[in-house]
Image (cartoon, rainbow, N blue to C red; front, side, top):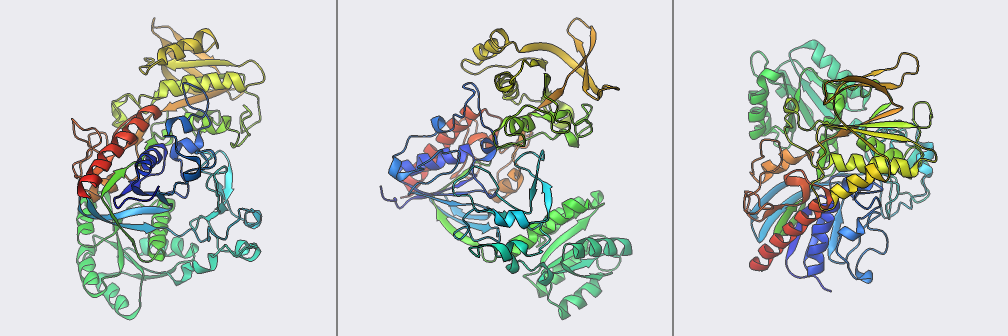
Length: 565
C-alpha cells in the first residue's frame, strides 16, 4: 500500500492517537504521529489490565492490519506501519495555514542518545550515580538519570533526563556503541542573565542555576542589563517586571529590538501575572511566579535550555490535524489532603495501585506494602477523590473511577495468594456502560467485593500499628471507624497537560472545566476548521469511548484531506 498525497498530523501517541493514526494509515493517508514524551502508549502503557475483560485489550480496540505492514508484536509494546512516521519527544509550537494545507512547526527535544546506535544493553544505567523518583511507576520506585522510559517497549533506546543528570560522563565512557552523546549537552556554555533589583533574588537564582552548571551573570537594573547584553552573548534572560526606572516590560522591548534571538522569561508576583501574560505577546517566552519553587523553576529553565539546544524547528505540511493529548488525573497531594496521602505510606492512588499490581512494577505484581513489605490482607477504595467536588473546579463525575475501582478489587482478589478483604466506599456507584452493571454485580456476588455507601470523614493512622483508619458515616447516620492495610484513592480525571497551550495555538476556547471546547453537533470539531479533538482530549471518557472518538476524528480528518486533494 503506497502513501497518498494527503497527509495528517496526530498529536499524542496514546491509545486515542494510535487509533486515529492507524485508521488514517489503513485508509492510505500518510500520518505523522508525535508525542511530547519519550515513549508511546500514554496512560495505557502503565496499565496491564482494563475492564470489563480484566485483561489487556489494547489490540482488540485497534483496527486489524496486515501483518507485513504493521506491528509484528504486541501494540502495547510498539507500533510500526509503512504509512506512519513516529516522532517522540516532539511538540507543536506553531500552526499556520488552512484546512487542507496546514503549516506546522515542531520542536524535537534532544535525548542525548542516538536511538539508532543504542542497543538497550543497560551498562550505562549501572554506572549512573543519580537516582530520582520513577514517574512511570508513579514515584513508587527510583530510576537513574539515564533510563528506559518504559520497560516493555520495542525498540527501547535509553534517554537522559538532563534535569537530573550531574553530567559526570560515566555513561558516555562505558557505552559500547558510542550511542551516548552527553558531551554535546554543555550547560556551562549556556549563559543566563538574571535581572532584579532585589539582591536576595539575584543571589538565590544565581546560586540555584550555577548548581545546575549553567553560566550565570546578574544585573540590578534594566540599564545595567542592556549594557551587559551589548558586551556578552546570553542565551536566556530572567527579568523581574516591577523594577525602579526601567521596568521589565520596557527592558523586554529594548532587548528584543537589539537581540531578537534572546529568550526572555518574566519574573512576577501574583499581582502582576496579567502584565506577564501581556509581555508574552510582545516576545517573552513564559513567566516565573514569585516566590520561586526551586524545583519548578529549574524544570522550566531546563525546558528552555532543551528547546534552544534542539536547534531549528521541524516543518511539516499536512491537510488535517488531530489532537489526542489524552487525560491527566487529580493529584491529592496538591489539595487539603484530608486523606493523609504522602503522609501515611499506606494511602496511595488508583494509578499507584495499577503499578503495584503490574508485572513490570516495583514488586513485580506481588501485593505487598512497599514501606514495610507486609502482605496486604484488607484494602479499601475511596471514590470521587477530586471528582464531584466544586472546591477543585470538578463538579462532574469522572465517569471511569467506579469501574476502575471494581476492576482493581477483582484483580487484587485474583492475584493475591491468600484471602484478601476488599471494600469500596462510594457516594453513588455509576456503572453506565454496556454490561457494566453486570460487571459490578459479579464483583459483589461472585468475588466478594464489599460495596459501602457512605461519606468519608477522614483517614487517620492507628496509634499502635500505623495502619490507616477510615472514619465514615453510613446512610442511616451511624459513624464507624475501620482499619485497613491499604487505602486506595480513586482519583478523577483532569484536562491533559498542555491543553491550554495547544488551545492557544489554534485560538480555540476551553470549556469551564479546562477541556478543549468542541462543536455541539460535532463532538470532535474545534473552533479551528481542520483541527479535530480525538479521544478524551475534549472531555472525560472511558477507554472504549476514547477509541470511538478517535475514529470519529479520523473520519472527519480524512474528509478534509480528501476534499483538499
